[in-house]
Amino acid sequence: MPIKQSQATESLLSAYLIVGEDELKRRRAIERLRKRIAAYGDLDFNHDVFNGDRATGTDIAASCNTLPFASDLRLVEVNDAEKLKKADVDILVSYLSAPSPTTVLAIISPKLAKNTRLYKAVAELGSKAVIDCTPLKRYELGKMLRSMAVGYGFTLTDSAASKLVELVGEDTIRLDQELCKISLAVQGQDPVTPRDVESLVARTAEAKPWELVNALSERNLSKCLTFLHLMSESPIRLISLCVSRLRELACAKALEQRGQGNLLAQTLGLPAWRVKNHAQWARNYSEQELRRAFIEARDCERTLKSSSNSQHAFEDWLITTVVRN
Image (cartoon, rainbow, N blue to C red):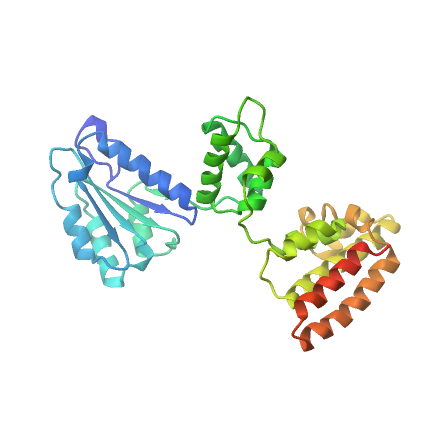
């Protein structure tokens, strides 16, 4: 429901739900809301913050019903709203049925479900009441980072953006911090390259299993060892994933020899994007090399299940598979 105190505040709703696991988006959403409300009075005297694991619905509702001091509006924030007890949620849902016209209630949560009463109560206030802060997919982060880099006064190449995600991970807060650091170091108008990123940013992200599997497919030993030492996955799971990929490559090789390479996704029961590089990767291995890799993987797996030195056994199999001629 819109607040109708003045023309300046007509576009504000009585409550917003800022929901999603992207912390940077949540921070920026609440910062924008604070800035808008601060324009109409001193926010220091008209701003209360609660946390869902400690606050009561009664205290939050009382704060919302308090009149603003020397301002048109008050702002009440509730962090980690998913931690509110049921009785406290009931009080807030009741409040939202007739909210104060002089308060904006900001309910903030990384993962409040759409089927909860609190989510539905806020959503009923208007189409803009729910501010979606769902994280971007990994492949979407590059475009966002390039846009953010412009805001910091420099440009970032596509490959440099990918390198930054590789080194830092998908945490948007940390990515934003690294972009700020890069902006202080770069000079001139040339775009920032992957080499620049590597020289300025330390790797803090744990490698993903698929990065190791892709490096195995590329037959890139340097990448394989780098990723292996940057992950905490068990060797038993890793060799299972690697063997699954090698089976896919063997299938790709067989289909291509028959002139049926276009049937790979259908044959494997995978989406086309998952196998777009398989034909190229399959050419990195001969049939004999794949056969030996499977036999030695069987022996390696037995060692992994019976030895305390499993990390070395898997690493030896990985090296032998990648470098064999």
